[in-house]
Image (cartoon, rainbow, N blue to C red; front, side, top):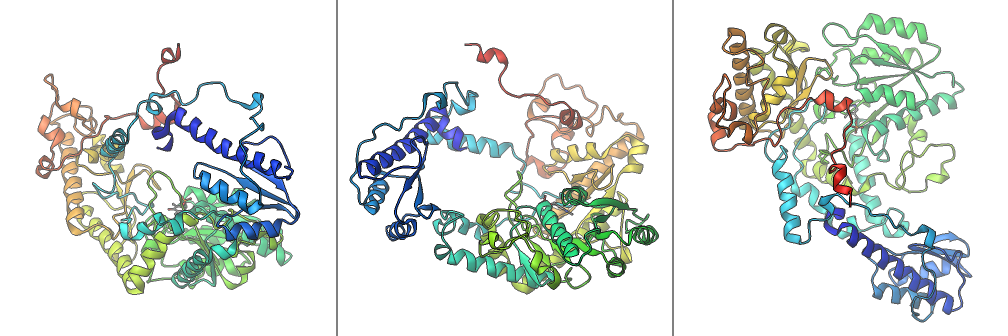
Length: 602
Ligand SMILES: *Cc1c(COP(=O)(O)O)cnc(C)c1O
């Protein structure tokens, strides 16, 4: 959006201005008797001084942070926020007069001469009003949480409330450099330490690090801690990680990245870990067993009742237990992985703890660890990572610190009772959907007393065999009802995984159930021969405006059924801007959606 708003000319202007400020600073310093480390620079001038610490503290008094390059060198960087007033103050710190820029031009060979950002979108918006309309147009095309529940199982798409998010725009949080001196980040440190304490209380572990930038990076950091722990005990041969077949794809990838070998443990017919296979794999590998990675409740949406036994068996064989805590939405306030057998877990603050994650980031994947793994946590909130020799650093500074106030605010505003209530509500919502829809679509896995955890898997495979209607057809048809699709074909192909979260009220859940039951009736119509699967509204979904506003409409179902399959849609309708595309085809065939080559001819 920054690029769209400024365009290539604007960006060039911004860069030139930053460079000019740097040239003014360099010229003035040299005129005042200083020498530079280099005559060639873009925005960063490194100047030789007698005593770096002395000039840095003098600059701090004037409200400017300089970078200590060495005992006798400091770095000064300019950018688009640098003003002439800042430059003047800076030069006063050095005790030199302002001079006009002289020399220090960018070397010819480094100056870009080719065009860039030639796509029309970077060259068509020239007013703030148009920018506003562009943003609005994009958001109108989006089927987001401000229109519909996003029942993506395993993703926990919940409300990101304005009250939780407001503070991240405050300059006190937003305008601090990640490497600002410790004395200037006391508030940040307090917030981070407090948040780590709250997450420690929630998970039941001995300590938490907020370093990792994603759940997957938490897995990586947690497995490195496990490896280092084994090594510290002279057991560096322990390099094998057991992973149940039902695990999230990141688990195995992280294990490999952390240098471990992966052995897959089978899933039993009811979706739980196959106990016999687990015993056999532990026995066969007990001398090299480093860890098991399990997800609790599992990606099958059920609480494995024997989770303690699984943990005990692995511990008895000398292995560590990694409990993937991405499904913490089904546990907060009710159960603690640190207490029922886990040695490490990651949380997804961008799932359970309200950081928005549509569009892919930024995430935070803190890990909690037991007492014995505390020395192997990556980095800490002190920011002095280099002091911890041999301990890997997984992210610089405080990781994705900028979004931490969201999770802090969520936990602080909810309180212990509120968080527990939210968990219960999330579980109740999923079970309500499972019970109501269970009559129409079989629920694949259920645990004790036929209950699910915080999500449920609708098994369409038998219906698909009978009618030809696939899970993908259902996912696409849901768009016509104004719903974002549930998770498609994960963790079991041919199924839909639904996670409503506690953020949805009964009315929205009933709206979803009505849509799914209506879709089930359309499947019956295929079965009864009213139309073939190819002719059905299911296979032809989703329906765009131009599909239905069409005087040549010749389908076997009415325009009304296409666009308004339930009456409430007449009052509140979302039209997708594109019809069905072959998703897998798109994944396999990379295409460029830039303007045609002819557009670049002149
Ligand atoms: C989302 C998820 C992950 C990965 O987390 P990212 O933040 O996307 O890297 C790992 N395990 C499970 C069970 C998840 O749902």
